[in-house]
Length: 418
Image (cartoon, rainbow, N blue to C red; front, side):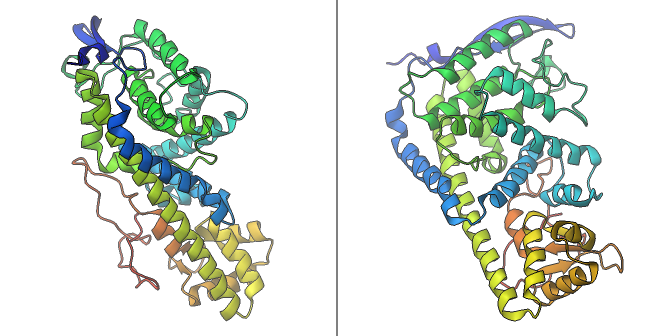
């Protein structure tokens, strides 16, 4: 019978905060005995097919950068929500568009920092391999301002941290002590770069994620970087040509299973159970992203046709509609900057878009009006409501702050979250 204990790390005693605790040091990857790939073939095949279909979405979309722009922001919101922020995608888009208030400033800043760190890492992959150096550089941007700026941005920790509980002594999990962090990270970097491996890239990505979370090498931001590592690794291996696969929504909606399975790897070496869960998430997430991309494409095409066929000033209205695709919250002033059109022309275009049911004015004011691309936001916001303390989604409200939404002009969908 297989001795699974060879997959389990070791515990070391360390003194921190005046108390002695047992900290966990994982074994280097790959697991020994090896992962039983045969048990995962069905999940792996489904995940491979879904990722391949998602990676081909650029053929479908006339502007893949538009989808990437919004999808990265949605991932930043979801990943930050797992860490406890209450900001929504609407909050972030408003903040980026016109620095509007509406959520705690630190929450918005954290999400905005995450977008910055993500895009930096993805851009740097063209010149720098996925490495400890790149991870530190991304961490520096992740914690550059807001609540985490005092927690050594860009530096691996030199003190003990813990997960769950109020101190290491009553924590759910205590990661490696500081002197064990760099040896564990060096082993992880070697595994990432190992050219000879019988492990499929998707399986390897799942192993890397758990190992990083277990080492927990920073004082803050480990969860967000650990989730981003999945996408970075798959891009570095050319499994993804575009960075469109993000698992935060899956982990968010099944976070009890997520945390349980991470702990079972540490306590029992249950890699197959974790990988079964992980690959199911890859397939589910890739399929959802593909479906969202096709729906966005259909929405944009339908609205362009609606404008072209029913507007008397189609040329200027189409230009404003194009600006709304990257700024689904838009003011007349911002629209003018983006399109070069005059203020009267912009105002007339927004009136046309309202009549056609494409945008909704959400301030109900005479000045400083803000227009929302309602159906586009509805697709983007699916699953992006914050979780409350019990792990359930908070009730949704619409962009105006709680008034009932207008009837949808297409099939009913989720309300926009605020």
